[in-house]
Length: 274
Image (cartoon, rainbow, N blue to C red):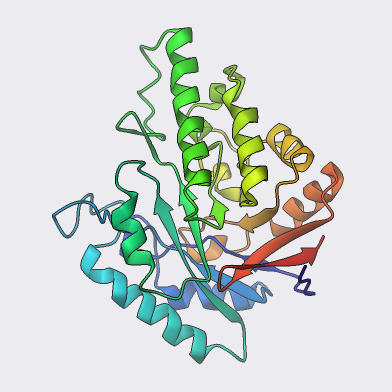
């Protein structure tokens, strides 16, 4: 088990290529340095590799034709800043159970430090779609939540990811989501624990209706029970959000009972004491 004495890090950041974030990669690195971080991970949204068109949903992800350029820029900045901050190469990957061979083929070409697997779509609709809940019965809401967590289970079992992103983000614009009873939440945590994959504490929930972090304290407590490793990601879409609430998250994890958290370098897990 590898331990290092890194004080501050952030593994989840975006930039202008995805179409809904502000600033260049360099801006996020500079913001990280100003905030005292020792590690910054760049992890913009992966293209829709399974689509024939180059830029499906332009305001959601980068173009397929930009992906190699994205990797090259991160690697160049990693070298440029090596004496100031460690820059890690990451990507936030969608999980579509029927299309992942397209993604895996692309990812194998590049030296990623880590890949964040995130479920953004359930039954063909964005998890952040504010209207999807309006006409659902209580039973249909349970079915929808179950479907979400079954996809997260599949992503954990795929072997493609080191980190699972924002595992209750479906509550973002529907805070009542957390109150929907589902046995699949605990089953998901069991599987994640068995597979040895980390989950992130993602502080971007504060920018949504729910106004908090992903996941909830209740899920974090269960994650500790199932020996799930945790990491930190601001999910910054603006440079000023890099490292947002890092110290508060650290204190909350210690309060819950976690003794360590982690980051990834060349897909190898490195632990940091809390």
